[in-house]
Picture 1 (cartoon, rainbow, N blue to C red):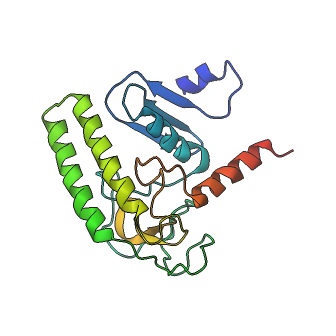
Picture 2: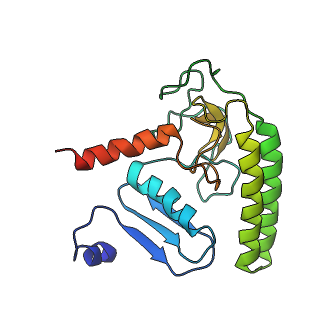
Length: 207
C-alpha cells in the first residue's frame, strides 16, 4: 500500500506510524505496522506496547477494557498462537518458576472491581468530550493504584499462569501478574514477553 511505497525509499524492517494527536490511542499488527499518538502523556507506553504486537506477535493481556473485537465471554478457548497467552492454565506453554501454583492465584475480583470503576469513568469522560488532560489524569491515578496493588501480590515477579488475558476474564492466562501488555504500569515486558522479543531479534540478527 501507499505507506509501504513511501517507506521503501529507505531500508527498513518495521513500520511505525506516529500520529500528531493528543487523544490516547494506537494499534499494532504483527509483521505489518503499528501506530501511536505522540501528544498523549502515555505516548511512550503506547509506542512500546503496540510495537510488542508488531515486532514479536505479543497478545494484549488486559481484559477489562472495551475492545473492537468479538469475545466469547466463555471459559473454554482454543489455544492462542501468541507466545504470552495460554488457554492451558495448569500446563502453560512457557516455563514457570518453581513452587508457583498453576493456575496462579491473585486477587482478581478486587482488581476487576477497581478496573471496572475506572472504565466507567473513562466512558463518561469520552462521552462528555472532556479535555484529554482529564483522561491522562485518570490513567495516571489508575496506574498508581494498579502498580501498588499488583506489586503486592504474593506471586508478583514470578512466572505462573494468571487468569485473565486477551480480552477474556476466564479461561485465558498470562505469564506474570503484571506486564506492559497488561497495564500501563512502568514494569516493562514480563520475562516471557522478553524471551519472545529476543527470539525475533535473534532471527533478524543471526548470520
